[in-house]
Image (cartoon, rainbow, N blue to C red; front, side, top):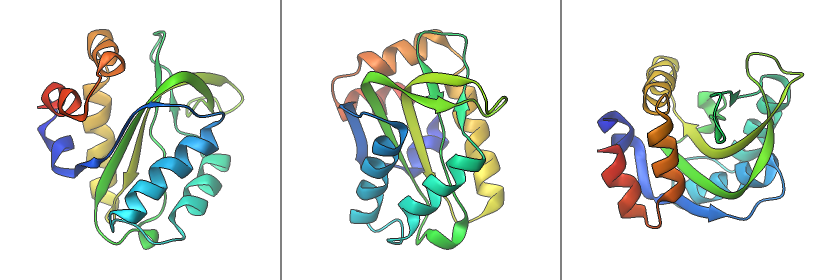
Length: 153
């Protein structure tokens, strides 16, 4: 289904059942994982948060579980990678299509890519993967990192 995602998604950067109070908490948690794994510079988290404030990444799916795909500029990335979280309770992200609209997001893919073309391709891969209500439900029900990687294989 999403083999290209698995090329970038480090199992150590998959976090299931995250308890987060805000979109900023989720971004910091995932950024920290990517930083500890050597994918991003220390400046990455703040750069993602600054970008999210002006160019939000919440994606309305018309489902119970919406998705956000935060990212930032390549200069904050050491090597390409992807982090992912499922949330215990949704947090609010602004809609990328209408920044005034608030979305309740339950799945977050944090992209750390050092090539603009890669970013476009990865956004398309993620968008194709999350189009199915069944896939989103399966992501939310996954209990292990192995469940996620099997689902995305």
